[in-house]
Amino acid sequence: MERHTTLGEFIIENQKDFPYAKGELSALLSSIRLAGKVVNQQINKAGLAEILGKAGKENVQGESQAKLDVLANEIFVSTLRNRGEICGLASEELEDYLVFDEEMHKNAEYIVLIDPLDGSSNIDVDITVGTIFSIYRRISKKGTPATLEDFLQPGINQVAAGYLIYGTSTILVYTTGNGVNGFTFDPGIGSFFLSHSDIKFPKKGNTYSVNEGNYVHFPQGIKKYIKWVQELNEEENRPFTSRYTGSLVADFHRNMLLGGIYLYPQGTTAPKGKLRLLYECNPMAFLAEQAGGKATDGSRRIMELQPQELHERAPFICGNKEMVEKAEEFMQ
Ligand code: P6P
Image (tube, rainbow, N blue to C red):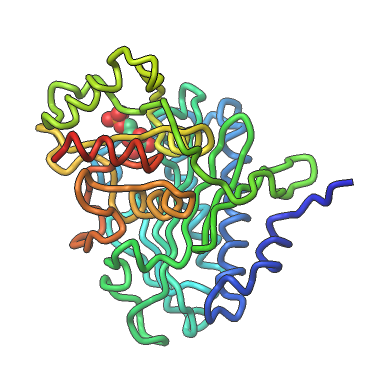
């Protein structure tokens, strides 16, 4: 009978992958696993618990906050604050970063950036949403309060990154720089089981994910690429298929498994695109590269961009390496 590895067992069995860590990164991933279970439970009963709809407040992005946004943020913040592994946390839902400087965090080595519920506009219409997380080793001196420079690190410094996708099943996908693995939640047992081992993008893909409603605002190179994917070319399996859900995690997950490219380019209405560099682009870029894919802003590797602000945006083209490089050709 095939052995079913739980996420907890996998983390322990791969402890060696976490350089220098004495178990903190393992414990941190376990905290994220716990918070993911709680968010998953809230999402699955959203329609029943009258927590649908808006909290009536706006987040720092000026976007109206669905109650689940607020709840997911509170769940991750409280779960991570209750574990001593991190000294600070930044979230799409919080204007400034949080410093955890209680006694229990004085030896904390890590900081976490999180988009607690990405694609939340889909919540009220029961379309897949996700949580995205990114983990760095702190730069500032241990035992002192976390500083902004701890958060403004380039994506190449990430020690771990991943997402939870709350779809037809709930799957936690993460990397620590040694490949990408996915764990599917079994609600009957309350555990995540290894279901997608060493995920790699297929060599070729023919799905493209972009909001074509923004076409008029796109740079010429992107317009040319979109026209190219829509041309008839049987040898190259074109026209490609368009799949865009309005949820980065859902589009990325499908494209990583089946082959495809996701594009959120800059445009006249969004000069630096829409996606946030620190807690959307960088973690997804880490996963993409670890799965043999590529992630750029159209010309530069996403993970080499030097962040200047916590909530800064970046144009984002990510997916199957061959497809991203073709899009970059049109952008030159
Ligand atoms: P648009 C969700 O708000 C998000 O950050 C991503 O998950 C998603 O891909 C994108 O924005 C959707 O944006 O402008 O196409 O609705």
